[in-house]
Length: 484
Image (cartoon, rainbow, N blue to C red; front, top):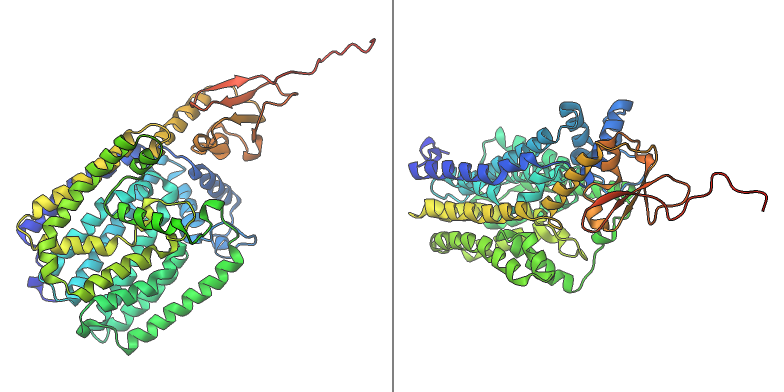
């Protein structure tokens, strides 16, 4: 690739700076998010493993069956956070934000490699814009605001790098070509140890091979390494069947109307429609939810309209079909889910659309308008979610933090019995959160339906989030009258 083709235009530099500012407005407030939900469970497990001096390789070959076998992005990641930051939530969220930055950089490399393979003008412009546009998407809300969702950015990082190596290899030199392909196989294996949906990576490679022109398609050497990748996927599937047990009911698979619902959700995530907006629509606040969803999606749709004129002229029908196939293959593991549907499930599916949007905008005179609209769309979706109180996810996290901070000032019994009226709200802290923040052993926190007799008091948490110490319905007489 010539130096001239790698030189950034003045308009791209300005657009990149503008996107960096918008990304800062979108994501930097996430550093103030407390731990919540599964964070406390993973944090306690990591601290216990570090204090016990457990082997770092143990999660890669667990003795007992576990819900998810993600040794790299879960057990190892949390142990690293505990070792490096001693459980500090601001630094942990900063780590998650750093992972998103790395994933965005990897998407930029993929965009540059794809533009080079397709012989588009100014591939570096497309790469840097594609990476920054990808990093601005609202679907990253949970991976930035919830430390437990770091696996999403890790998967996107490793997958984008593997795909960039795959796309670049056929036109690389004799020396670089085998190293790129070997790196692709290693990255695929690493991604599989981070999240299950990496199993679709060989399919994504085929979709990109269809996308690029015939002269940039893989040859025999690439085919051999691709088969090696498929073999690694097969080995991983066999190991996963041994190590991973049954997941919760939310992760059960079904073939019914859920497929249509999940397809509609995918389109929503790609258009920056906030999940909380959809929740408002189905929970009785349809007007507010629909208005918010439209306000978030419309600017991004307008950005696509700015790019559409150049995309229609620059892409062939085969490339449009390959792009649709890429998105569907990437999201395929989530389409049959019976119930769960989160925006960050589309983290890999969104990579190619972000690159295509960048390709169209880079050739437009309205580049600055397009990136401003895209950034504004994400800001509306993300900031609106941060403003919501319970049952919004971030609002629920703030409630949990305020409650735990108040309880830290209380005198806590050795055995803490907890009666909670709303299991969904309580999940934001959980028994693990109470144990971690109050200095208790996790076995000393027990969730009960009612405060039993024989104890001095229980912690009661009402549906509205208020809490109080409760006495049992009755207590035994410490001095019974045996004369009766």
